[in-house]
Image 1 (cartoon, helix red, strand yellow):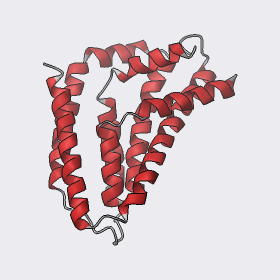
Image 2 (cartoon, helix red, strand yellow):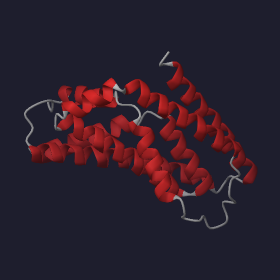
Image 3 (spheres, helix red, strand yellow):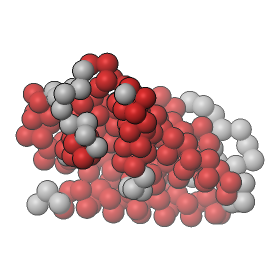
Image 4 (tube, one colour):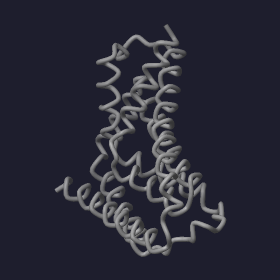
Length: 203
């Protein structure tokens, strides 16, 4: 029973993470320009946010979910603005030489930024609730079963970003500084577009 719930959680977490949005773009860009570890940190941040929203859905924390949804306009506005800022910063960033050792400073900041950005879409809670319901996990779960489910969600989401960053790493050594500069510019434009879409969707 618990193993089945755990495996379903992994499947849900993986499937929810697969669509490549701004977080996926950030993971690809960080992996290409700063190395595999940086990409993994972005993925870990996204998986942590999925874990938190999965907890809200699995444990039926309606007070938290209702509060987040009622304030979704402000939350998404802040998230869209932050995406614009990150997009401009990414577009203007100067890539490091891939042949040099990448400094590990700023990893925790990247992690927290990713968690915050992922959490700025409170409607994700309803996506989890819907998927849980479809797979027969909507109601009646005890605390242990719910914990097993969200642990699976975290692992599934992490596995997708591990796969994504590992796949992208294969191309990193083939890029010179000019190629990495173009990666920054393309990623910056895509992140800016994502921010604009988020803000425009509120109008």
